[in-house]
Image (cartoon, rainbow, N blue to C red; front, side, top):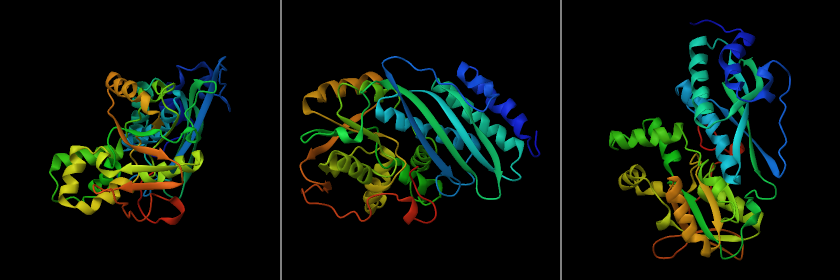
Length: 336
């Protein structure tokens, strides 16, 4: 099926089926959704926007564009310890977008709605003469007063990250064909990590009671840790040699060691960054094993301000810009 879609038929065919599991969505037939309140819980809400040519490549497969949109938002909820239950989509599709592209986009959305057990409960669709612009609002539940905020870190806390760092920023380069000397399997792995993040929805909620503070890494490890430092009125020391790297990232660094700065400051990792008291370390390691997500201690929170990254000799590294900034950057970037 091709040709220009009808807005209401598009909603009925592609999006309304994703709302059936949540009665408050009203089958997407009304102007609002009704969120049920639950005693003892708070609703965590987050929203991220993605623009073609900024947050994803215009030629990226539409199903992966939809799935990335879902996942960058679920990553924010996971970082707060919230369990996701619903999303709302606002989409400005370029004029002339055909139904084949839209159906593949809907297939990707459906795949992640199913995988993460959430419902699409509303939103809006419009056409635009500009680039494809997408926004998703995600809702999660977290115990009242239990959310892992950026402001909760304490001096002496151990700094932890999940998964591996730098794959997203290197993956953008791989997707753009910039790693001609890299083994094809490594380049494909990195490109997939850029296009399809892995929100740590199983790990985040289980960190409540263990961690003091949390956020996800979207704009780069150094910059995002700096946000946490400012909110907590502390400084941080990170040992570069302890930052976990995938085998693909290690291979890329072996080809071009200067990419270490990209690994530490690039965005689109969507891994969890959290702090916890040293006594919680055994329980955090056990948790990582239990939920199947690697967790790595990379440094400590200290009195002071700002983030210091130490090299193997214990000297502070000069890394240039700390991470992705939307209003001071041009062209493709990472982070949402």
